[in-house]
Image (tube, rainbow, N blue to C red; front, top):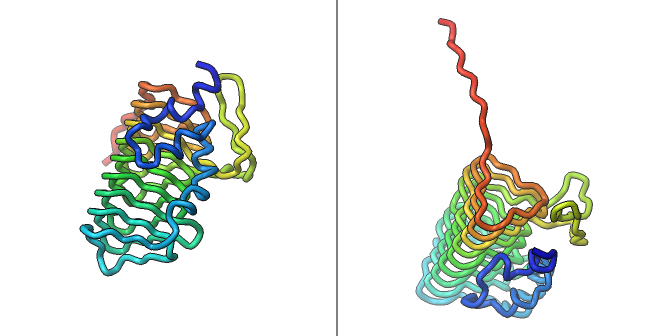
Length: 237
């Protein structure tokens, strides 16, 4: 595949059924979704809109006015929706589990289950990241993804430098110093998986437990696992 084909959003997501498909389709490269997310939400979510039919625990804290919550959303106790730095949109039928913190700008699609921390990210329909130890920063999570306990989508280099993505022997500049991972539709991660800044994972790929993916492209339908060496020693009584 060419660089243009690999980095096109259609290589990662089935876009047609999404409520915000026009926004996704117009991005030239998949990481531009993150670059332009704030502007899109500023135009789309202009005030607080809380639809009927859902459930929200009295302990939920909403900071900022630009928060849109569609119908049938369930928000568990001790959730923080922080829209002071950007709008938040939560799609119909989604459940936000106890203790979650969402920092805008953030867009969560329909019928998702979310726990842990989400910051400046977009999570597409049907995705589950339902463990308190998960972190999603400056990332895109595709439809029907499943993120295992302790999955981290990290978003900054130690030296705070530009994040570049490795495609074969070539490093592609992003002109971004904050960029997490791009996970295509139906990607699964095992417990403790870490995806570094600029990791791109194609559709239907599985990232096994404790696997680390750096700033590289994992093609679709790939399974990554660790080979483990175990030593067995007798304990002296």
